Amino acid sequence: MPFTRISLPEHRAEIWQDQISAILQAALVHTFSVPKNDCFQLFEPVSRRQRVINPTYLAGENDRRSDDFLLFHITAGKPRNSYQKQELYRYLADKLHAALGISPADVMVVVSFTQPEDWSFSHGEMFKIPQGAFS
Image (cartoon, rainbow, N blue to C red; front, side, top):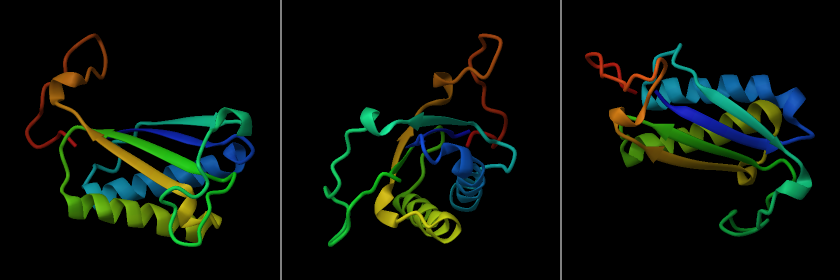
């Protein structure tokens, strides 16, 4: 059950949000084996003034981050291996570039993992793992 906060440029939010949402969910289904309907995303449009982002730090040789910079902070329950994480990063960068023209230098992803007891989906109840359901 990943939960993702997506920080995106305020000036792009209206036109990009639906496509970013669909690409992210497809990436999680494809690379992290998340069930198709397990979708929890929070979009946070940010103005240029609210963003302090180094344009070149670890952006790649001869690359610069632009005003189109996106940050995906994914919190997931079940840990994934390095291969799955690399596939997620690549899938997102490739699909966002193909669909929206977003430079791969503008896509940053942070993945964190938690334990089942760190989640309450509703009613103040701690999440209990149904057989094979925690993603």
